[in-house]
Image (tube, rainbow, N blue to C red):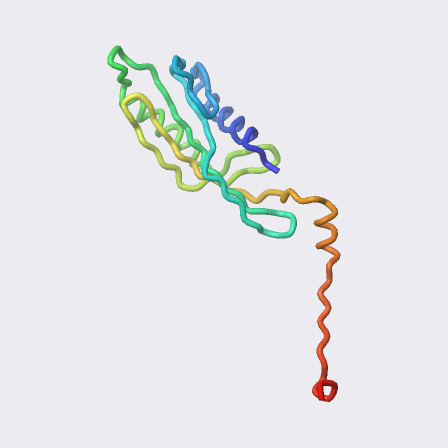
Length: 156
């Protein structure tokens, strides 16, 4: 089963390849005195639905925050922020995000550019192995449904 840590690591690898000058890529939280240029990645909005006896359909939203250097008024260059958002949107709009032995499907990516950051929301979805006790899964696989019907003569 794909883990959250594997998704975060894959997203971090993509960001570091796209922006080699990043000082840091933070996970889930950004410290008060964080470095710039940097990024933060986090996961939210998880869903899971039964697909088959051994697989589930899963989805999560990957949030990517991008931070570039700011001036004395804590304002970033909006053109730089916009370009960073565009590059990241293009990368995360690819057909999939490789994570372990899977490639996660990517939905429609959304972005917002603020005065000192850009935020992307990247919807991810994939089919995954179901976590179930082996004996329960084996028992369910062996279960057979036997239906007997009676003829009209047998019911009278």
